[in-house]
Length: 113
Length: 112
Image 1 (cartoon, chains in turn red, purple):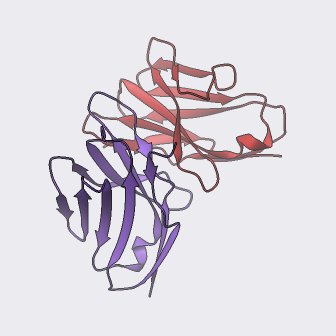
Image 2 (image 1 turned 45 degrees about the vertical axis):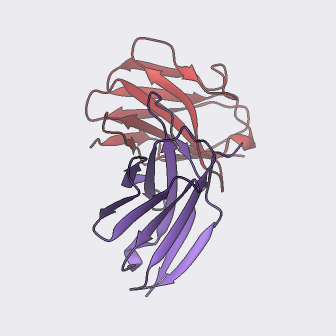
């Protein structure tokens, strides 16, 4: 298993600002993933963060909007830039420990006014 | 294109009865399927999985059935308990990829 801590757990932000979400894992992992869950929607993969290389973004997500850092094997950040109300979502960090299942953090609920 | 679908957004069941949550998929390449449970203000937690080489996997009160020809899987919870009240997501993936495709979730409410 894996213990994943995310900060902040929730925040209310103003339009046009940026917010950085932190994800800390209790063990070293190769791949970390960032998901988004918009209200009433499924979990959608934003990007995959590998240590030592640039993140790989899924279709519909770009680095300028969602810059990601992965400075070491236990930590990653996701920034939501120039926020609009459409960015109001739960953002989830997850890891794959190699057993074929994902482990998730508790999520960061973002509300953009 | 929604490759994994959960057509029932909500389900209510009496305590002690069976809960059946359904999931359909469209991609024939999927060979591994998972169910996650999510409580409010928490991240999803893994519940049970099944490989495409099987048609059933059981873990205590939870059983997942896979019908490959129909591209359908279901999660059975017997007996249902109030603590099972949560949102359940099915997810699918295939060998050689790290990507998991999730359904939109079904909110289960178990009534005491």
